[in-house]
Length: 539
Image 1 (tube, rainbow, N blue to C red):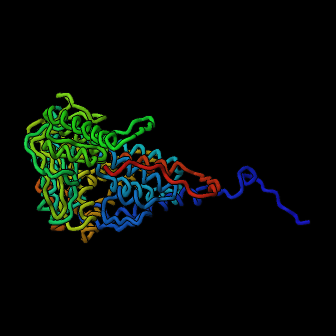
Image 2: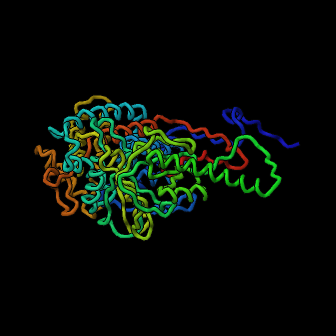
């Protein structure tokens, strides 16, 4: 009889196959290492000279981008602690649209410094207490760095709008930010309502067409549909529009029915009545004054025949989100079934035309006079991955909401580091070491910017500190010339909101990871992996 050792301690409590890690070395330090690995990936993509990453996801889709949010999204990170950083980056991207890289890289740097403090003998709770004091002080200092007079801005002034979004766009598309910002600003100003607080980012659309270059990109007041018109009428000016959500065709009845036909005349009459019914419906639409029919579903052969006869232009939009936007652009009401629309249900367009751009036929719906609510940036580029990257830059630029600005080009970070270091000397107790390390973490940003641009990081950081110590808090790095310059001469400004949330999210994520002292993982369930719930389509 074999002697079997009974499990004891936590083994006896949990199912077999579980994993249990505890203590500083096993749990805390391993978590910190995992987060550092993730931030090391995104860090080289920080700033305008950031390198691109080539990511191939589980569906074999290729991404070539330096947008940290896209990179970490597609990496499918498994480690539970690194996932916390991914979630912080995602929150930043969804809320502000820019600064996801700063969030993840800064959180990784905070954790790296926390590991040094742990090795020195500090307890994680003392580090968390110091980090919390430091982030509160940072927010206080950041408010003092806001440029005077930047709290108010004229949202209709293109120059002012461009200056606010320039940093977000330049970090994705360095060297092309002037052209891109001009397009985005034009689109945003067109759709900006009388009260700018009600601005909806969804109203700035992007249409990506392969071919040409960025200089061929334009802004259209209205929508660009990536499909041809269904019938032979390809162009109309100043027309009324009727939108039918369910399609333009004979509708089958809900109940099943049987029709007995005894003779050829009856058969002929039966098909004639169907024809007459469709003609009557199409004629009623034409009589209501509509000259464009938009269908959300299939367009029947016979219905199309009568639309041609009554000189109606037919468009088909299969995506329901796109159909809703079309209704918003034209002011039409989507009707459920094919019937005569009321005058209130009709929309209006200045022009609908099918044009050929770069070999693909697109339908351009312009609505310039009727209080336009949707604008489309038509992007041109040589490959799909370039277009995807341009689209991300446009989305990030359109998300910029707050108008208050702080000095960019790492000027704010060095000033924060300098003032926090001074603050740490005034603190007594063990918190001061954590606050000093928090201040040191800010040096990662100028260091990374300089390294990514191929400059000597130590030289740049020391000259930045020297300038800031003498009171020039607006001095940052000029990456093109490799020297330190006043940012107001380079017009490199960062949004206060982006910095505020990025630093706050990073500090929160770092503290969350440091608070963990045990990891208990149950045995993964067997059987086939369940598919994640189906998401919405890309619109």
